[in-house]
Image (cartoon, rainbow, N blue to C red):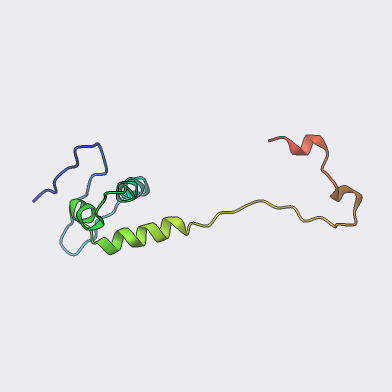
Length: 93
């Protein structure tokens, strides 16, 4: 039986095959989580609409919030004269 579709153009819940999990793209996961973040949203209803368990929404939220962020750093010697500021050509953004 197909899942009811949202009136908004949202993620499509792929059908579950016997003994297989549904796979949602990261973009679909983000859209579902944005829907769940609304003030009057019910996690149980949203999860049911997409054919997933409420705990899956909670796990997705944790996974997306815990995404690592990498920042480039340059370590210099504090006593070195070049440690004050790089030349202007290196500061181009």
